Amino acid sequence: MRIGELAEATGVSTRSLRYYEEQDLIRSSRTPGGWRDFEESMVERVVMIQHLFAAGLGSAVIGELLPCLDAPPEERTGVLEVLLAQEVQRLESKRREIDRELDVLQGLRRDVSSPTPLSGT
Image 1: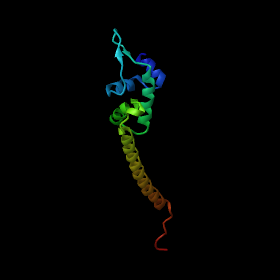
Image 2: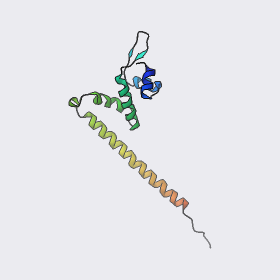
Image 3: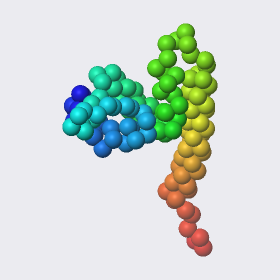
Image 4: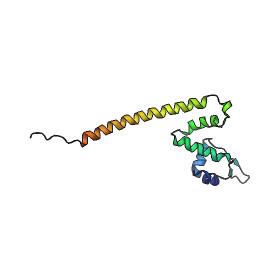
């Protein structure tokens, strides 16, 4: 399958697919004419990559996770679970930070919007 077909099948731009390939997240072979040729299995892989990006993971972490996800369950070493747990912890920490920032902003909003007593009357 050519890159345009993969893009259409996944809803991902050809530019993003080239980036994924550059980052070794997906692989292709080359036709004699020099065109990229992707296996059908890359459709599922690109969809998985999109889900991982949507979860807030970067391409380096995704690159670490993909071999674990590709391995049959009986061959997994626990690395996948550790990496996922670390990412969950990172995102929960980020959420706590955002919650603190929201609390501060909401407090400021309340302070600004409450009527101030007139002085000197």
